[in-house]
Image (cartoon, rainbow, N blue to C red; front, side, top):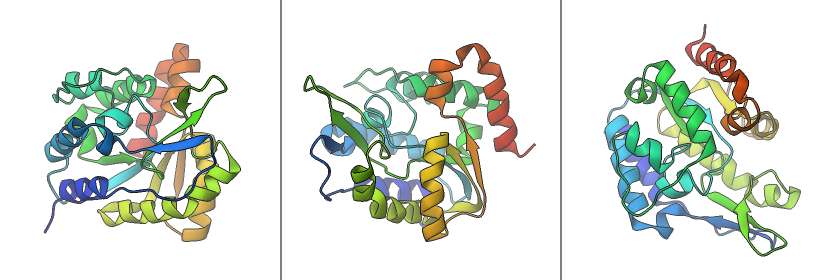
Length: 229
């Protein structure tokens, strides 16, 4: 029987999105942009998911350019990939705001090995999305930023979530990061009937950027929700 690590790696290697998007949006596949991303992603999942244990599912929005868009690991920039997970990336150096909060929470939970033994994090749309600015730059975008964009990715998201679940994830309760994200996941869940219960938590980026003075409150809220206390 394949381990959950092998199933996750196979899923990531087969990612391909070919649907048409609104003209000012693009999808980036990190595994095609940098060969080392594939290498460190495999190292991460072999290290923390080399078993067949069922895990609880934590759902983000979609990968950022500086987190999973580089490392291939959700909410993990190169700094924390190296300092916490023990995996060094040679070709890139990134700092991602959401990663700071998430790994503080992981530390309080008991560390990376303990946390990843119980939880799996990914996104309903598992590839990075960027949009063009008026100046012609490309910046991070969320799948729900534009109605036409959401319509373009909706079916792919449902299929993607079903594939995640089939890897060996619990469906009795799912943890959704971000209140607006939760509104859209609820739409998908109503249609596809994927999860029994949805527990909504503030998104790590929101906490780190706007609620840093209340950090401990949100860390405690996460731990209580994830442990079921």
